[in-house]
Amino acid sequence: MNEFFKWEYVITLFPKVLSALPTTLFIVLFATLIGSFLGMIIAYCRIERIPIVNQISAVYVSFIRGTPILVQMFIVFYGVPSLLGVIGIDISNWNRLYFIYITYGINTSAYFSEIFRSAISSVPASQYEAAASIGLTKWQTYRRTLIPQAGKIAFPNLGVSIVNLLQNTSLAFSLGVLDIMGKVQTLGALYYRVLEGYFIAAIIFIVLSISLEKLFNMLEKRMHAPKRSRQVTMQPLALERAESAMTVQKSIK
Image (cartoon, rainbow, N blue to C red; front, side):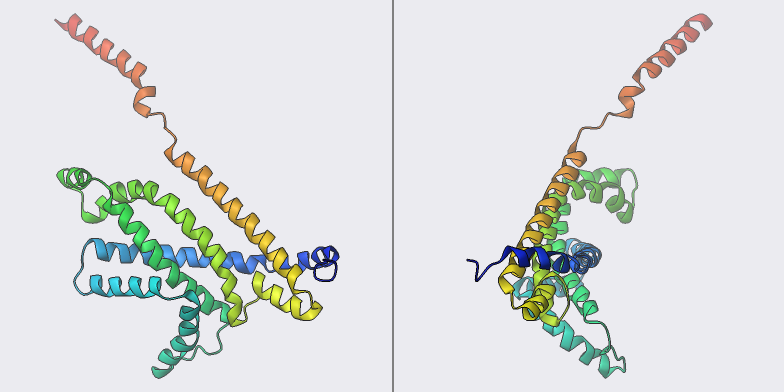
């Protein structure tokens, strides 16, 4: 055991591996933002069954969910510059991290779109009818009625997807990005101690995953916690006003 694994190297390498944590967190952050934006658009197109766009969105989601993210990463890295080069746009000098953001954002959007679509579709049809009966436009119906209710339904699944996204970032080193796994590979080649590096990476990912799960569980409980209605707190004042109005009416009579 002393030959293959040494705790002193764990102590030495841990700060060096931890220094790559911001890169991993930025990948998760940008992928979540891009995925949320594109996912909502895709979900809307599929729910409203917009001609042509609906079919394209269905093929897009099927392709992204049916192919490994590593394949998507190389398609974006080699394919996007080639396509843009045809129209005279050169992005070959971009930082590789940008292609990682794009890849993980596209991948996340496909999964988020299905979560959003199922959550919005689960809102009772009576909510649509109620919104239409008071004259709300389609945009107002989504913004004021559907999205707030669907958000509570979708939130647990979004939390699970983001935790999975965090773990999938371990493949970003394939493009030479120095995230946590990229740092482990680099330090392993430098110190000839690979096992310790993987052990450190495992500890970091476990701590981050558990922390995210706890955070989403706490936020979910807050979202579903019963809130005191303003009507309840205003009841005594409303009763006083009603009684005073009745007194005034009696005095007039």
